[in-house]
Length: 329
Ligand code: UDP
Image 1 (tube, rainbow, N blue to C red):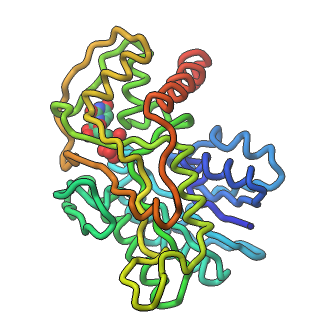
Image 2: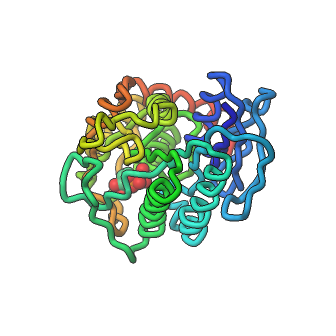
C-alpha cells in the first residue's frame, strides 16, 4: 500500500510510520512539526520507502500518483500543547480533516481518523462505550481539542454517508511509550522525568481521577487492524443493528488507574526518592476514563497485551537513555 500519514512525526505517528514500513508499505509522512519532531523520523528516513513532506495539512496538499490509504493523525494532542495552540488545533480538526477526506475521496483511498477518548469529555458513565455521546463543555479551555475531534468524526461520517468514503474512526485512550516528548506535559512523561531528575512529582487535584494507559505498540496493532479490516466488517446483514467498521472503535487499555497510584508505581520503578506535591486540577479535567473495548475485540480481534509495569519499564529506560544520559532536549 501507498499510505499518507499526517502527523507522522509525532509520538504515535512515528510508531505507526515505523510499523507500516516494517510491513512493507510505502509511507508519505506529512507534518508541519508544530508539535512533531524531526528526530522522531530520523530512523524512518533511512528507509527508501519513507518520504517526508513538511506540510501544514490545513493548506491544500497535492500528492502525485495513487494513494491507498490516508491516516489523519495530525493534531496537538497533549493538554499543554493544545492549550498553547488552540486555533491550530481547531483548524487541523476541521479544515485539515476536510482536506484529508477530500484527498481520500479523490484517490479512492481508505481513510482512518485518529480520534480520542476526549470526545466523551468528563463522562457520566464508565466504562465508556462508543454509543455514549459524551459530556463535553463546548466553551471550556479543552474544547478546542474535544470539539475539533468531534467535528473530525462528524466530517468522516458525512463523507462516508454522502460520498461513500471508506472511513474508519479510532477513539484513542491515553497512550504512552518511547518517543513521547519529555516535556509534552502528559502525566506519564512528567512523572518519569520528575522521578529520574529527583524533582517533586506534580499531582493535579487529589490524584483520585482515573485514566487507563495503553502501550504504544498495542495501540498501533489496533490502528493497523482497523485500517486493514474489510469494509463490510461488522455488518452481518442489512437488518443488523450492529455498527459496521465505519463507526468509531475505542482503542485503549481497560485497566483503570488512579493518578496517585501511577505516581507511586513510577517512584517505585525508578527507585526515586522524589516527593509528591499536589497542584490545582486543570479546568474540565475528566474525573474518570476507561474504555469499553468490546467492539475492538469483536470487530478486530484486538486487545492490549503489554502490562502497565512492562510498558513503564521500557518507557523509563527510554527516558533514562535519551534525556538523562544523552541529555537530548
Ligand atoms: N496529571 C497530573 N500531573 C501531571 C500531568 C497530568 O496529575 O504532571 C493528571 C491530569 O490532570 C489528568 C491525568 O493526569 O487528570 C492525565 O493527564 P494527561 O495530560 O496525561 O492526559 P489527559 O488524559 O488529561 O488528556
